[in-house]
Image (cartoon, rainbow, N blue to C red; front, side):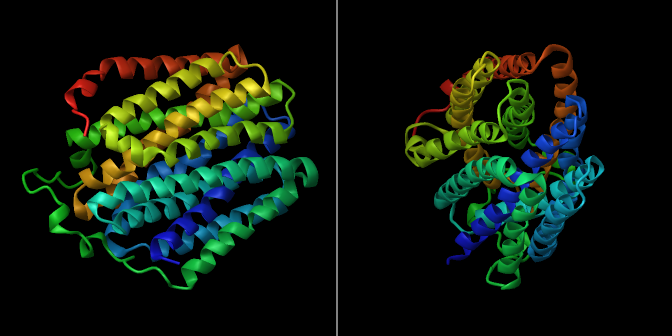
Amino acid sequence: MKPLHLVIAILMLSHMPYVGVRLTASLYALHLQASPLVVGLLLSLFSFIPMLGLVPLGRYVDRRGMRVPFLAGTLVLTLCTLLAGLWGSLASLFVVAAMAGAAYFAVFISGQQLVGRYGTAESRTHNFVLLGICFSVSSVIAPVASGFLIDHIGFTYTFLVLTVMPLAAAAIVFANRLPDIGPSQAVSSPAETAPNKPAPKAGVMGLVRDRSLRRLYAYGIMFTVSWDVFLFLTPIYGTQLKLSASQIGIVIGSFSVGTFCVRIFSMRLTRSFTNWQLLLIALVGMATGCLAYGFAGTTVLMMSCALIMGFGHGLANPILNSLLYETSPPDRVAEAMGLRMSIGKVFQIVLPTISGAVSSLFGVAPMFWAVAAVQFTTVYLTRHQWRAQMPR
């Protein structure tokens, strides 16, 4: 296999247990009679350590390389799935949530930076689209398979089955078949830098003050918020509607089917629209899906709304990653990517707690409507970017 394909395989084999553990843990907590607020706190822990550690981790990857984060992340993910299966209590789920979030994003930040290296400026978007397609596949398989396994073999064995995948990812890293996993400075290319643009100052605030990066971070927050509200509230919503774990998994999988379908045509769309125009189109899709999801009351309607949201999210994410790689300083790519995810993690910590409290009082619909309102407002305020960018 080519190095790019091996990296994508490692990311998929880490992503599937991460998604599976999130869904299985939330359903198991509800099975143990935990309130929506407690489930919100549980899911917030998946983002707590990444929020604090992604920027330092990005700096480490830029300066020292990716082998250690790859190995540590895949092995700790294996430990998390084992722990959840062998120590079946609500307390264990909180420990697993904190560890799994840190482990997965150690792999993720390293892998995304490496995907950007395996290509020129022209092929980089294609590489990120390919990665996005593979994430879509794993995002379909993980929740559907987890829901099916929960219904047929129970929570304990579902966690244990999930152990196989990160263990396989660790084996690929141990085989030492990945070139160019050293520091970022070793592979930066003068041809891909922007000589007329001053480099951001050192430190996090230097990246935040960069207008182009700041705009990308803002758009990233919009899509992160939608995905996490959907992922957190769907198990609660489905449980309230008396859906089975398999049905809830299928609804969540429908979101990923949408991301998969739109990413197949992403390269064609980039030839007709600019990246910024595509981001606005994607944001409209997410907002429309969120607005309709609040009114959905059956499995079929929930699947349809999830599919629409998946179209928007699937279109945006590879474009955001490609733009971020190209806009970041060559020797600080992983740090810039880590900052984007760290900002997103702040919202991933706050939103489940807020969503749990709001849904306990008013139901799940108001949260989806609030997210849709913010996204439609963002589109309205930034609509001038559509006219400012000429189609290619």
